[in-house]
Image (cartoon, rainbow, N blue to C red; front, side):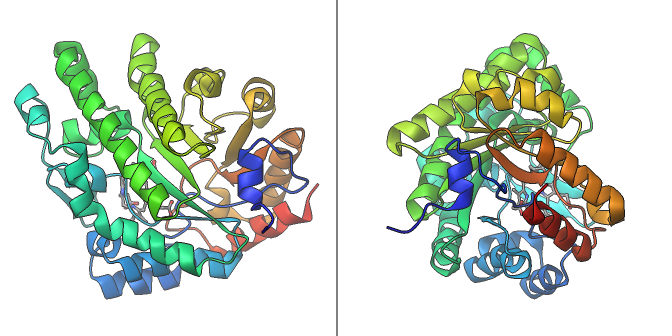
Length: 345
Ligand code: CP3
């Protein structure tokens, strides 16, 4: 039997001498080879929906840096598009969607199963990457968590404070809850299809979890994550699930217990020593070097990387950034981070 991949060992709760490492947005504009493939595709969505090209950019950071995991190249907004929302990207500004704010509009979304038609190329990307990855490299699938996806669907774009979604919760909680319910079911189907195509772990990106408080955090961040994790684990026993309730602050404590996920990804606003005592006590953590170090590099990168390694050395840990790498990052600094992690402390 092939030895278990390092990423999967850490997600299963094993403390490894050197943690597995990968990087959020590791396929991205900071890499010249990504920019070249994206230029060939013409635009971002065509890149996402062309399996050969999406597989190529998924593999590029593995070839260059030898990360322990590849993450499927796609976007969290493909699922709402597959459910019937219009989606486009404004150059230099980010995503735009048709808005979904009324109970009629939520009711008009396509059923979860119908989304597979649009998403079929994503599953083909998974099959290609699964075939081409080195045997020691794990493949991670992902989706947006329902709350984060809903914030884009309600506002029709990214927002600094998720104001439109919070207003809908205040004015028509039933409609907002129905949207979350639909996204929860569709996310289970989407991730299940990724697993069937060959991903070995899944991650839920809840980038805007930090703006939820009290009952809203429980209803719209914790409960959907718990339902998605338990539905997937019922279908695929032992499937590792990573959750990223970004900027959840103190609510990171207990999140794994409340949701049943195997690993909690930490953003870089969380102190690693605090997280070791309050989050890692429940299982694997992922994170959490500030992405800015990929721009600035140098001794500060090395020292901060070592501090995080030391803080999490007593338990299961997946080394990562605290958020996605930015286009201004220098690939040399990524190489320095990988080298520093692998040298150990
Ligand atoms: O991590 C990876 O390498 C896998 C691929 C991936 C992308 N987006 C590719 C992408 C993943 C996991 C995502 C998740 C995603 N997408 C999130 C959650 C994570 C986070 O960053 O908080 C969100 C909120 C989105 C929505 C989204 N997609 C935005 C707001 C933008 C525009 C911002 C920007 O950087 O331009 C995107 C576009 C996007 N998704 C790019 C990439 C590589 C850049 C597109 C380009 O090539 O121009």
